[in-house]
Length: 275
Image 1 (cartoon, helix red, strand yellow):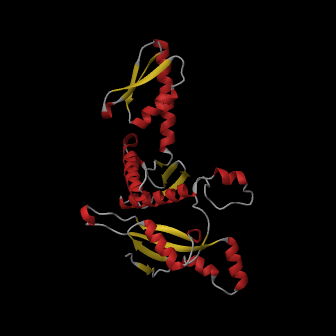
Image 2 (tube, rainbow, N blue to C red):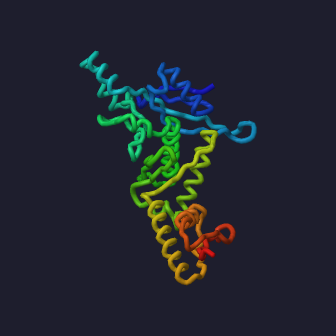
Image 3 (spheres, one colour):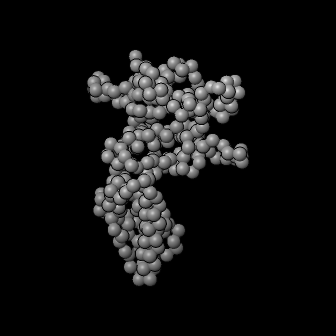
């Protein structure tokens, strides 16, 4: 039986249950709202515990009622002296809209929105999953003591999160090692919570795109040398995602070919002339 209570800070209803989905269902029943009429914030994803459920922790969420712009206008018309603005400021009521992301995916439609924009938007489940991932990542980096950092959803499908603000060099680590570890941990947490596999990519101040450009330039430079000398050349050891960038960059080159050699962390790409 999940615990339900009203948050004393008046920022909505907090509900705990065995899972996030069950907690959402309880909150909707308590508020008498539909899923589209509320905003859900995951405060704690919960844990199933160990053998026989020992150590299990319930999921805890905060649910806030939301209103569309039309609803707000109707409230103002019905009660001009009402406190709609105060309710918004206090967090008891929020303006409805999909999750706002860095590229505008899922944001409320503007005046010039067209049907084509709606067709290109990601599925609603993908947007919801992206927000859950963002919340989890914020919690992770805050627990690491980096509370000045913020997280944006760049795209919901495929899921790409970007960490920004402050000095992210330590978070990235040597050649992105720390960033990859953080991405791995987040992926485990997210897949466990959703009970299905979802691929998530974590970036920090655009590091991945800069690194990809650097690797593609490196691939072309080494390919040019191999083309001139007709001698194979080995690149430095790289993780799988970076080796893949090299392979793709030269996959259609008529003069050179690539292959990976070595084991584990020492695995690297060899560029050699095509026979």
